Every structure is written in C-alpha cells, then in structure tokens.
Image (tube, rainbow, N blue to C red; front, side, top):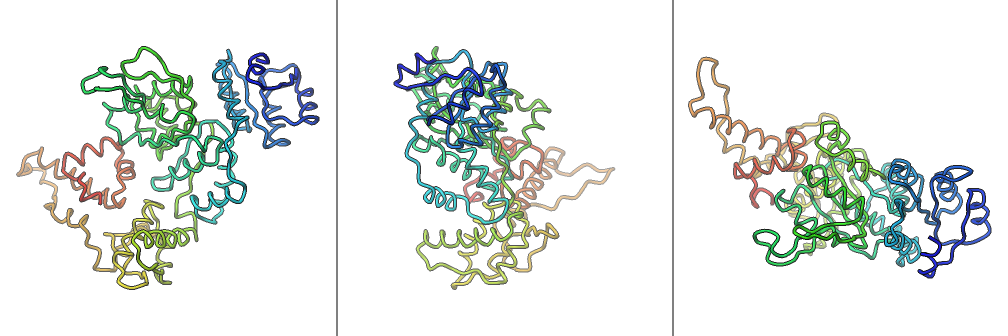
Length: 462
C-alpha cells in the first residue's frame, strides 16, 4: 500500500500499533488516515473513535475483510469516512483517497449554514437535531437511509447530504423506484447496449452510471422488485454495473442515499426485501419528523411557501390572518410538508385580497386535526373535483343475504373497490403513496387499479 500511495505522490507514515498511531497524530498534521481493524494492541474501531473525538476534520477509512462487514458498519457509525474491502483494490483505494485529499472547495461555515436554513426550514428541536446529525453524516462516504412519513421532505434532506459532502461538485441523481415500470427498471438503472432487446436502437447510459463521482438517491426503495434488489446489491457493494446486453462490468463510484416511508425491517421479515441489501444501505440513518411534531415550524413553512408562490406568480405577497395561523397549528397534516405547500397554493388562488383567512384554508372535503384527526368542514367551499368524483358514484348498499346484486358480482365488486380507492385518496388528500400504505398494498398495485378505473388522469393529479 505504501508503494501504491507513493506512486500517487502521497507521502505516508506507517504505525504498527494504536499507541504509535496516536503519537504520530499528535506530532504531525495529516490529510487522511487508513487503519486496519485487527491491531496488536487493540481494535481499529478504538482508533476511529479517537480520531473522531480529537481530530474531527481528519477523514479516517477502515480496511476490512468481507466477513467483517458488520464491524465496518459500526466503524462508519463511529465516524469513519469510508471502508475498503480486502484484498485492497488499487482503483478503489485511489478513488477513496482522491475524495479524502482533493476535496472540492466547500462553502465556508456561514455559507453552509445559509444552505441548511434555505433547504431545511425550521427552528424546532427535531429539526435542530436533524441538522446536527446531518452534518456528521454528510462528511462520511457511508450509505444513508432516510425514513419518514410521505411528504416530510426526504429528497430535500438527501439533496442536503449531497451538497454538504465532498461530492458536492459531482452529480446528484434522484430516482423514484416506484415510478419506473418494472419491465424498464434494469435498463433505466444499469443502461443497455444497442440491440440488446427490441427497441434498443442505441447504447444507453444507466442512471447509476450517471451518478459517477456524486450521489445516487433511491427514493421509495421498498418498491424495487426482488430481482432488481439482487442487482442493486452488487452495484452498491462492488461499485460495478453491467448494462443489459453487455459482457463487461463498468466501475462506478457513487454514494448511495435511499429512502422509504415503509418499515423495511418488517418487509425483510416478510421476505419482501432482501436482508443483505437492507444491511448494506442501512448504515447511517436519518429519521425525519412529521410536520405535526414541529410546532411553530408549520407557520414558518407556510409563510415561506406563500412568499415563494407569490414571487413565482408575480403577485403581491399575501399575509396569514391570526385565525388562519391558529387553524394551521391545529391540523394533523397526514401529507406533511407537501400537503402544507399544496394548501398554501390553493389558499392563494382563492384569496381575492392580501389576506389569507380561515375560509381559504377550509376547502378540502374534511381536514385532520391534532385533537380529533377528522373534522367536517364549516365552509361550503369544500366541493372540489375530488368530491364530485365521489358524488358520481351510485351509493353502494350491501345486498340482502337472500338476494344477489342486480348488476352481477364482478360489477358490484368493482363498484365497491372504486369507492374504497376514492375514499382512501380523499382521506390522504390524493397522496397516492400514503393511500397505498393505508390500503395495505404497494404503490405499483394502487397505480394499476387507478388506471383500471380511469382515476390516474392528469386532471385528477393537477
């Protein structure tokens, strides 16, 4: 390794014990540190913890055998920059040290703080804690898993992890795993060669390869089919991809950031998500708080969205009345920040003056509140095209035990299914991911049913 690093023009000092390493660290200034796990006078994890406590800005990476993966993950959580599997691959070693030694110019502390406040709005305790954790995680190369309810801002946080890392000048590629048809997934993720299948008229670079040198964000990763999970595991673990129809693998350097609102551990127990992939992506975790637990952040976000939308629409900025502010603080917000943004856009549209008042906010068929979870609207303005869709349905009555449904069983069941889908969508304010969760089905299954009943149209989504 010393010879390899010397060829890269890197000067090194070698320590054979932890105590010797500590002495060298105290006497000299280093740009990076590499440590094995098994050392004569202790464990490499002890050195990782020592460096994290006393030399916080020094990137430290761990050398580990394949069987020590769990310990390597523990090292990452203790503050390691990254790890390299044995036998050491020269290319991976060079890539790792290039990131450690040639870090792109990052914003100074003030610019970094402005970036955080711009993307992560709020002053509540959960958000302050999230900021602190996020900064530590951004310095690492370890995979990050983001969890939280739908609409809490997982992609915003993933973007912030990327922009605060030393990969900030590389690409940030975001993929919604539930939005790509299963038959196109492999080609979209890994690319393909010309002629590899019908319609492949030219070579295509996959999205994973597009993330080379940067970060790959896999949103709703639980939606990946099991066969794709196997291929993704190799790409994440070996940093190699094989395009469809190719006989050769391509080296790719990326950091994986993934997210899901589902309980991945529960899916692993059910056999719906691979355990090995779960452990590989679930190294550093960030849990996003729901909006209802963020107190006054609700008003900060509401005012931010009002200002942003009014500027985009080139109209004078509107003001929230006291009644409107009190109303917002009472809401449950099952759709979280995304729902709040939609509510502000709707209120701005309905308001004819400079004030946004209570009637402008009470336009949904019903609203969740912190206390009762469901309240009926007090405003007659609650008739939307969602409600009209429900009103178009014939009321469903259970058939008598001695009679069959007059329209036949299939038609009757379709009518029941359609009404249940519409009720779930209205309860979740047409947040399809949350509706699928409440109905106990996958997002893909819900989308199929919506298309089947003609409910997945641009008119409804708008």
